[in-house]
Length: 550
Image (cartoon, rainbow, N blue to C red; front, top):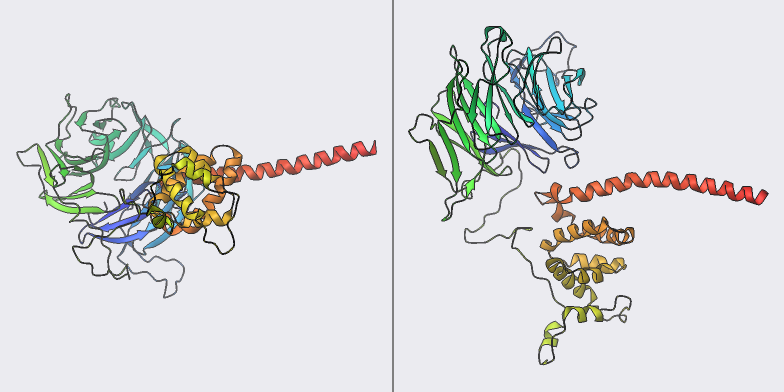
């Protein structure tokens, strides 16, 4: 959250959504051009700065800025090593930082004062970016393992980086100032708790690791005797989101931690040295539904307010989060609070009118709307036209599926002008084979090579059967090359007939990720095989010509 006014979420589909927590509306939505391949791995709000007009080149009137304008930036790290800088003021892409990392970016952090950005990656390096030029300013090796988390000190002089070992860097010299060990797994969370310089023994920071239910607090001492953590906060799962507020003049820290299991833990503590026992939360908040058998509702993020009287919560789905401001429960006598909410009636999936031009039709409250791809929604498959006539007045035994398959003429075509029932039978049998996962039925259907028959069969399939068909095609394409050649025809027909339905699925990336990577790897291998085929052809031609001459 940025200044407790906006909530930025990047879902699995690669879309960046920014929500206004005051109006509870979708403020902006951005889809990167490579959101399917370069998925977002981390996100960080930039500091709010005031733009001042300096003695730069003379700008045109259309480019002239205004003094006092606040520019809020978002940095998004991707799995391919690039960093996307998004401007919330412009509502568009600001710039893209490339060429700094050879692995996925795990953490991005802004400098609080200068126009600098720091990124840590799987390639074990830290890169310092100059945002004015969009190029790397400095790059150094941080550790032997991946850099999983980072944090810049409030004064901008120190940088924390961590894999399994936490290192504190002097940003002026790029040298290690301190080392801290104590986590058995990769560190995923780093956060400075105080703003005092390390020379006063009053600099504290927090760290959390994956599969670790303790949030550790470290003290940076002037004498260097800071090998172990001084305080530990007890959690129910690994931390997912942290927000803290420090008081002026005292080392009192108000801490809110959202764990991976969806619970919120609130702490209040004075950082004045080591504490032997782990501290339990002063209050634990959990969300649940209002059904007869209530189900837990996961909390996504939280934000503390300076007046200590309210708390901002974001819960529910990442695609449809619900934001609510509740009364702070730190000073209550109850150690565990469960809030019951009806998520379906309080969904905040609304968009500002300036962003959307689509008019929502007026629908009766009693009407039911069926969406494609919902669980349990099985659309009926149209049977052949003559099926009802055959059923009337027949006392013969019903044919089995194998007998029906035997009577389907795959290689014999019907007479000209006669209605063909083969396509309808194929659609029915294909749905039955996908639901029962019968290999015999699927093999009979997939053996056809007629493109017209494949196209008509795919077009007659119901929407809930499309995704299982794609999964079955993906599975068979990984087998024998002869089978893969046949599956390409079916995949082509699916993409031509049902592209609009596939693009509307919320989990499209996870569903088609295996197929995409398999096709990409085979395309790369095809170029290598083509080069090898050309070299072998030239070699065999020279051998044959040599034999002819001799």
